[in-house]
Image 1 (cartoon, helix red, strand yellow):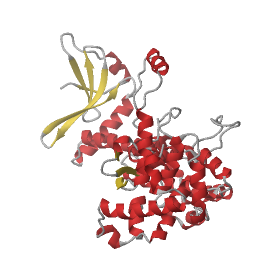
Image 2: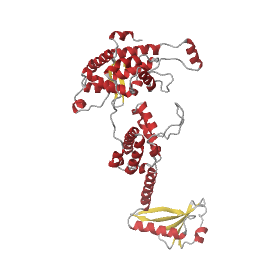
Image 3: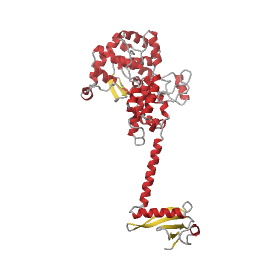
Amino acid sequence: MAKINFTAERISAFQCEPGKRQSLLWDAKTPGLGLRASDGGSKSYIFETRLNGKTLRTTIGDVRTWTVVKAQAEATRLKAQVDLGLDPRQLRVEQLANNAVARSQAERRELTLDEVWPIYLEDRKPRWSERHYADHIQLAAPGGQSKKRGKGKTVAGPLAPLMSLKLADLSASVLAEWAAEESAARPTNTTQSYRKLRAFIHWAESQEEYCGIIPTDSYKARKVRDAVPPPRAKTGDCLQREQLKDWFAAVRAIPNPVFGFYLQGLLLTGARREELAMLRWEDVDLKWRSLNIRDKVEGVRTIPLTPYFASLLLALKRINETPPSKRRIRQLEMEGKHWEPSPWVFSSNTSASGHIISPTQPHTDALVSVGLPHVTLHGLRRSFGTLCEWVEMPSGVSAQIMGHRPSALAEKHYRRRPLDLLRKWHDAIETWILQEGGISTGEIDREP
């Protein structure tokens, strides 16, 4: 093997021998350092030695980027590694892997909340109700958009100030400062936002891509929890026994029967407003008197269908299955559409989802018309739970109908109430509510 002292001139003059794919030239000064010239005209420095009785060869680099001096120094470094029994090729692979991990960690630490928040929402969306999903979007909205109803611009949600921050910057100090500032203006929304942010952090820690980025237990710090307003039970917001007669009279007078029946359903079932709004006809068993409620806690819960509420649903079913006028059918056909009954019990022709969302205004107008104090839609659910005590319904029964989590060990592990047992109590509370509301049982079959 020919060896010469490498110089820049000799490196430049060396060429691949004609008829060969490559030619090698070795440095007389530096052990293992070689020059490889290919028939294509490229030239690069190489290092070759023996390790564990086998030939080891690796490329140092192109002669255009490596000077003779740097190539000699690199060959010397590689020879020192081999003398220690190390394989430079394996060390290089490990170094590249470490570099890749370091780059990945650096990129992870640059992730902002508004980059990961939509991924979190899409991952959890199948397990959430439409309302719960919309709440996440609204609480993180940047604001400044034209209002869909009324004039003016929308206000940024409580989570908006955190959206531009890096996940790695969501420290306890940052969260405490955010909670203190937001709670001064909107304490209830701040509490809700904190809970949703806390759930997001739990989710991020369970994902390999985001685990370990957010400072550990930042949301648990004492100064953060002190800055978040504690949840408070809403005072009032519940129908009293003596108000039922006026309430039924006002609600039953609402021109749109879908709104009126829906509001009565909230009071008579204790369901959450989005649970009842998303009720499908496939969830209604009129023969065996049961409803399958899409529950945010259990997934789906089955509750009794009481006689009066069943009569309301029968009326809605007749309305839903009645074809529109021939003119309307022709108009739909011209638009390339065809009429068919809605799959939603409480359907809406103006809602993008096909079902009513939240008929708050019709309910408010009905309350005002009879001089009743304001009661929210959730207040109707609260009213059901409160009024159940008048018939001495066991708390576990009302909780199971309403879809509350079991609050005691016995309820959680040892109570499995069949539907007929729930029906006994559910029918009793409906009968009592109707009597107090001035509706005789004879009206059930005559409901429009």
